[in-house]
Length: 110
Length: 114
Image (cartoon, rainbow over all chains, first blue to last red; front, side, top):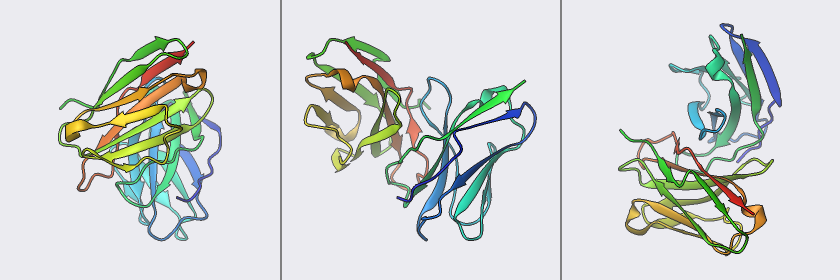
């Protein structure tokens, strides 16, 4: 699986959009971009995934660049409960293992 | 619908002892995964079951670790004998075979080896 690079930490104000970047310059054509998060002391939680089109669900939006070498996870209105470590993961298929990196620690401040 | 459950939530044992962790996946999920995070490190994959068969056990650290999934339902992960470096949080996840992009994680078992 391709390696991903994320900033170690970010913060944003409550109610504002949180934009979390991820670089995956060695991604292959058949690899998807997944985002998970881990809230303190809980198991990781799936957020969203995409191949090349932008995706949106009830939790977030995923913007993938046209060359697929980077992506951005957008939490449109961050709340204090969104404080967590966010992981960008590249993966070939739905049955594959997840390869976690160090992620981005997002702090949402009141 | 019940999520992935893990037992125990915490375990404290002494070096050289044996510990068995249990994972109950979401009912009907054929895929079951074990991961762990040891102190200060990233979450690492251990192994993957499809039903009762081991699909990928490339992440198992050594032969002190034994995972089973008899009958393709719940799974156990036994550490025998436990070493200090085995301390960490062990996560289990499950996903359905068809159309399951999401892995559902349990709350984890925190293992402390003294």
